Image (cartoon, rainbow, N blue to C red; front, side, top):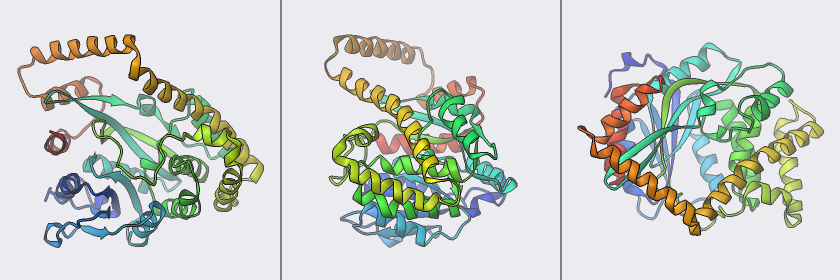
Length: 357
């Protein structure tokens, strides 16, 4: 186990909830990685074949079973015993030393309800990992106004011009997570748009309290694997489409009522409606960009040419390397002036490489 003095005692106050569906090999790598640190993990495993008890370390609570998404979230919440939580999928990694600093930040400022760090997106070219810093607008994200309207304005307009999405992946207070689970239990399984999972977190964490990011790498995100295969999840219905189409009007009404029931101590129903409409307009731009990007990649010769040119550049890049690709990624990150724990990030990248190659 990594010496805890490197991280102080903060990791013991955090629980990482790992969600997995059938992908036992990926999950095994994740469990092995976190077993090296004094950090609590909960594995919610929707699977046909469970992992052997002998492979589950003492710091891990293993919860196998075939349940709905909301049931899995509720199950995880019921066994959390720490003040802070964070969620992750089975094929991605969080850097423990950065997590420790994030928890320290939350402990030292009780007005903060959530926090996170920077993300490196990992992909591959042939048999090499390539990576780059993503979500760059969040390097300076500091939404710490005591006024809810001002926090909403900052999030939706002032920070990056478009609402940063993905609040659900932040480290958050367990009390905030419980509120989210309560809302998810009432909405996810009865709503056709499964992006509601992200939307609820974006809105809740924005309303209930402050949030601030640190400029240090915390998340190694996997852009190689497709999303977890689940026939119950329709990923083709985007939030903006669900919001606009009349056939989902009853779902939308119920969604609004359920979200408001959890936020009624903070804002009025009319104010929630205003926030959600503003959020919808911002998210629509993001989702349309993503949708058009997917469509153009299918048949566009121009896109194919761009891809070919990019591959040539990548090939040229690697032709002149005198070291392995993990060292290249570490060196490239160093040039960005973003802080990171070199040893732990290298450990995560090595696990990532074993998992994906």
